[in-house]
Image (tube, rainbow, N blue to C red; front, side):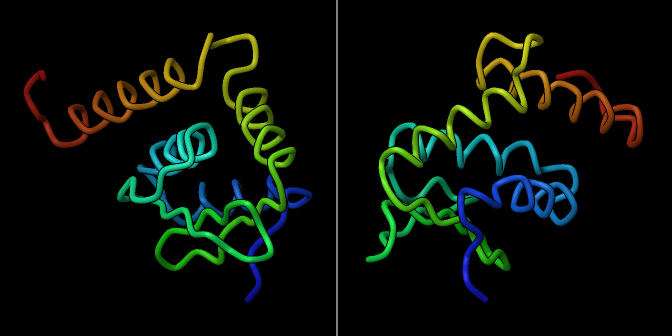
Length: 116
């Protein structure tokens, strides 16, 4: 199956939310970092060089998201910032930190873990 395109970015993000459960926020944040500073190998998401694209973000069992050029890379980052930060968070890093804190808090409640 071909990767999603920028025009389908919300479908790709919704797929991530459905299939990556508690760690979806990390997957999205790593894609953001990879789009901001294109370095392959963040562990949870792989950026591959595709002859038809500037980047293709793909994790295991994911058909991926293909960005056609530098303009699409910028639009992708801006879309993530609008969707996840909005007026609530000053940056994607602040959003990821808040999501991580919520994840840890829920895990502590569910499993009775001690504090960090």
